Length: 565
Image (cartoon, rainbow, N blue to C red; front, side, top):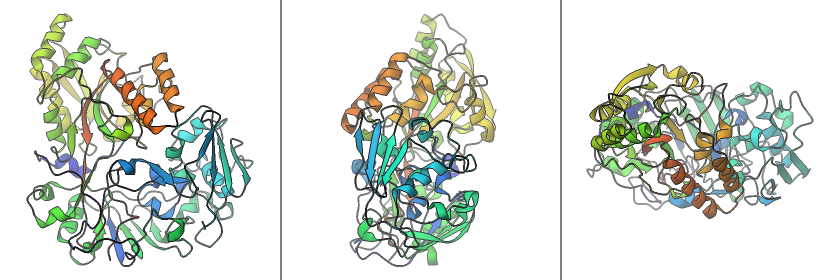
């Protein structure tokens, strides 16, 4: 999954570091302890840059139920919604537990709770969950996460329930409370996948196809009062949701009003001033801007209203090992020595919003992170060592091209490219820059026939595990020649593929973490990619907002736990 970097981040030019992630409890300006039992009341405003293009759970590419979608849709499992390491784990939601695996993790069985209802009071059944999943296969409803098409038996060509009303045989519902999934191969991460919005129940009688999203039927604490795509969304309480049946969502505000299409600088200014209703405001996509960052860490009033977390995301250089000179491991090694990660961090906005990375996996235990640095470049690169490696390989006066997006909105644009160009120049390598329109960048770099030899890239995990980080990038079976390819090194090692399968079969998270970390370390020796930075997130919130604590899954605060009372 590619994480879209908010546009403000590229404009930030701050060096230096800020404090670590805040703790729980009341992080607002008052001293009253936060109590989820008494937090109900008020209206929460959500000020966002990006619009809500779709509100159909089948079309949302969101793990963990997301942020705004999680207010409407419950899924079989969900994020544990806690800060730190505890927040990187899934938790039961509609289901009574995380699922029971059998047949070596090729079969997963779930039992639904008894006390779950749609917004009209109708009990939620296993058939509703099955139908919701089957809708996500319909070509009329594109955009959702693709995993189920690969994981479920005989699902690759399934056209959805509108064309094949008999449904998927690999999803069984023997009774109203039981749902069983038959997988084509072992998948120990299935409880993570079951957090995706495709697992939200949909009542078949209420389905209106592409028009369903005008008023999707809620299974969560809120339901839709008003929805204008890309503009506004107003949520009010679902009278048939029970706090006793959903202890993870506190559902504090009585009303939630989302406004989209705002400029990031305007959002941050409104959150900073906190005038009127903006005192009850948050954002889910506008990281702190340069003006506000300059005030942080100084003991200012704003320090009390900032949340800091880390979404598992890596910015890196992708080598096309099928193209000269990047088919030569020595060239890839030399560039790994030459890179100046400090300049890249500064180009992204400074150490408040990015950290240097020598590993592909970001530094998070849940992913299996193991520290390694096979081509130590120090803080500012080691151009002398890079020159030495190139000379030993008989390569001098090397000229290469670097592809990048033509704007800085996603953190892989001209500013970062210029920093890399300068670093490689110190090692005697001439870099010509190839700016590709952001709208078509993924089409060009994701098709082997048009992929450049060297390009800037980012990757973020769909859930906090090493699998969704390493598999799309290094599993040779994931190479897609027609387009949409993320294995840009075009690396295909049967031994690595087999190790991926073996790890995926594990249902013990600790064992899987160790194996993913070891695999990352093994691949790192080959310099198939050049890791640059990992992401840090800094978000402001309004003066009246309480419990704005980043969770360990996505690095931002959870709307389902925020209070404005």
